[in-house]
Amino acid sequence: MSNGMRVDLSALDEVIRKLWTLLDDMDKAGTTSKYETEIPMDAFGQTCYFREAGDLHGAQGEMKASIEKMIKKLHELIDDFSTKTSKVRDKYNNEEHEIKQSVGGGSGGSTKGQLAQ
Image (tube, one colour):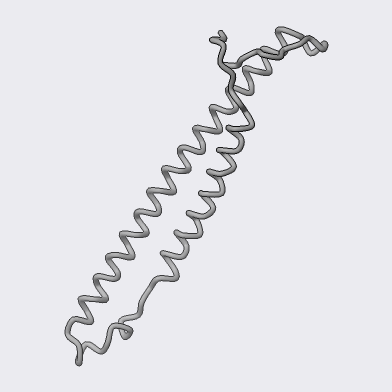
């Protein structure tokens, strides 16, 4: 059921590749935020000299947890979009293959201009 539109599968492939790269970057950001942003209590000063040191340390811990949560949500969103984009690409590819088989039967028949939907 073609409506005259054509799907560029190579463009979908490029989107998927970029999403996978973005997921990889999100994994790195998640690892960094979890393991490389811990600030030890003594970095804020000694509590006997600086009463707010405990508050600062607590606020930093809360912010760290918040950032980790945001990165996790972004990762889930990008992963979901990537998975759905891959499924759409596969569906178009399968339909294009079916059209080629039905039109040319693999015997060299022309399928140029055919659309998968």
